[in-house]
Every structure is written in structure tokens, then in C-alpha cells.
Length: 148
Image (cartoon, rainbow, N blue to C red):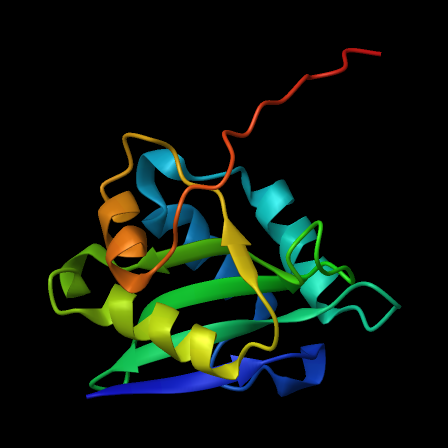
């Protein structure tokens, strides 16, 4: 059975700390990972209560062991940009194939107010899971990296 813990503020960290979340995500996002500094910035954003910021971390435990983490940010917007961005979801490789990723996403959907968007690379195997849950492709994202 999967049990969940929701963290919306720094003081709510109990079984795990901020640095352990960063390390877990960095280790288990595999080839789709960001660097630890960027993961940390995202978690810092979630912990802020300024207007237009916030979100939550959703921790999933399987048999009392941390099995996965999802990071959801609030955008402070709606309509033209969804209210929420699912930034990270990672499941420990030893727990994959047990439906934990799906359960984490479904739990996140059930506790999140407003629409959710996520970015996924076309060759990421998780893309099929997102589509089965109900996510659809609305736009192709394009980026310009300003070197200034």
C-alpha cells in the first residue's frame, strides 16, 4: 500500500529534509534530471508563500520506505497558463512497475485545485503514462536560450 505525505512549508518536513528531497529527485530522474541547484530552486519556490508562488511536494512511501516524490508548483495564473505545473516526478527504480508513479499522479490530481501542465520529452517512457491518465498535448514547447 502506498502512503502519502504532503509538504507545503519548510516546517512540515518530518521524515525527510530539503536536501534529501533534492538528492532523491536528482538520483531517480535518471537521464531526464536537472542539476541539484535547479531542483533546489524549484523546491524553494514551492516553499514560498509570496503571491503567485507556492505549491507542494508529494512524497510516496511504499512499505514505509520513500518510493517517489512529485513536485507541483503554483503559477499564480489561470486560463492562458494553467494554475499548476507538475515539475518533477521520480520513482525509485526498485519500486518501478508497481503502479506507484500512477498513484502519485492521481493523488496529486485529487488534491490540486485548477489545471495542471507538465513538460515531458518525446522519448520519455513516462509520456505514455501521462497520456493514459488524461494529459494531452496542446502545444509543442519551443525555447530560446538568451546568451546575454
